[in-house]
Image (cartoon, rainbow over all chains, first blue to last red; front, side, top):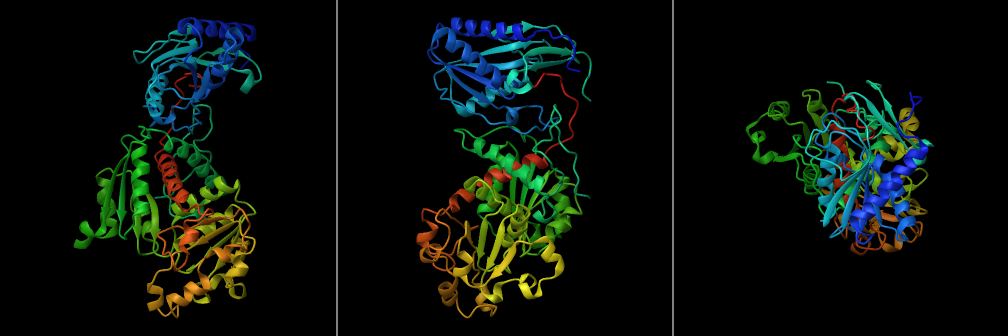
Length: 179
Length: 344
């Protein structure tokens, strides 16, 4: 099922993440007070990747961490996944950029905004995603988007990453591939 | 009712918390190693949540936990209350002397009444062994045994396992010595099952009158030999403690003396109190545990309870994390198909 032609291939993922890094630094006018928080599980590796890019571009590494939102979800009666670890640097007064792989309903981001409150009070919170596939259920939008991909509601968007899957790619699997 | 529940599954097919197939938590004797490990793994995550600046989340919103305590308890009851509240559950505590129990309402009636008011989980402590089993067969709420007579205290055992694992890195192969009134201790009984399942070498130590007959080497039945191969009995405290990784003192209930099982509390303290001198025979990096409440000066010396090897307070904190993990697992409901949000 991973044989479908990727929407983004390895090179495209690399370039897109690089552009996200530039846009984040540009919006923040530098690296000062910048903290990238990857949302578990898909966003954590992407946040690290973008932090590496920013370090190459600016010579300074931003704060980077991961945030698990499982226990803050509002749809837990349907799904009960195991929470992943959250590892956060100090976020009080910082500019926090939430990083996720795919933005769809917006419920993950709503939960992430709640979860952030457990750890402190950032000055600004922004959202950067690799893929925005539409179908929002909440009034949430991303500040920085890698690629907008029009999808059917029942499509499945897979982001493969070198760290976990052995290669980088974004794939759209049509229809309901999982029961 | 059987003890099977729908197994919660995540969108990528991993089961929540690994293997989990319990509607109730009655004792550890029906837990597989994988189930114990999945609870410990989840407790690790819950411990991290608990250490946050603000530990309040809505995961169990709409889930109702009733603490039904027919025996006094501070730490277990408060621990369940906190665990439920951290995860956003509604928690109500009922103690028997203020409830209809004094009016003669039967246990089954009480449990059914609580369920009729939509209690999702009932945490029960009762002086009669087996009471939670009776409750579990008469309701479809989840029953959690918070101590039944001298029988079992599974959540204490899980928090002990978790505390040992987080302190010593592993449980398998560790020499764990439990000292005191083994016969009447539900903690010892549940700990023994859990520790044996996880591959620890368990030593039970106490005066002969307070040791379970069935576990003495000479009259141990074959099934006990098969189920508990690494459990041994030792009446000499110095020999028991020698080389121990974990020393666990158990509370001595003063009524044991009235029952004629002990000549005097003073003599017991002389022979079986866990003291600094006796702990010198344990491994240099041993840890000291006690399920509480402690009688300092009887089963444990005050200086030892507050000493550098003591992890008694850590047990208490970990107890909240374990109970969060259990409530989270028990509240898992049927999984519906993925909403397709990538790895979301």
